[in-house]
Image (cartoon, rainbow, N blue to C red; front, side, top):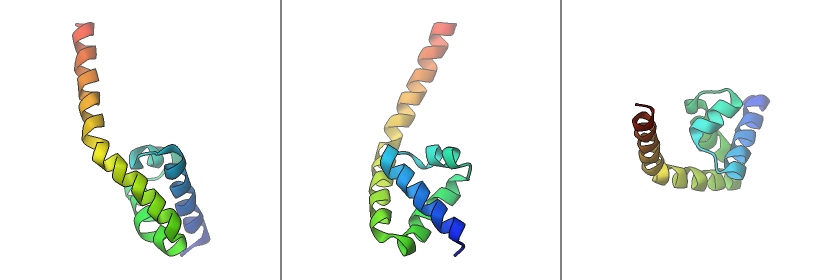
Length: 86
């Protein structure tokens, strides 16, 4: 694996752990696709730093379990805003 890919995977994982960031937010921050973030932290990171990979997986699991709540709140805000504007 190329050095810059390993470095990116570690940087991405550290960002996710430090900020409790979602895959989408992380992808935007690093200028890569969501699938690249996912591959970096689920496949590549295990070979580089298993402990960091576990920490990252824990954050992503929490984010995934809360995803439906965030989506519902975003939809609620959208319709509340539309109601106020009209």
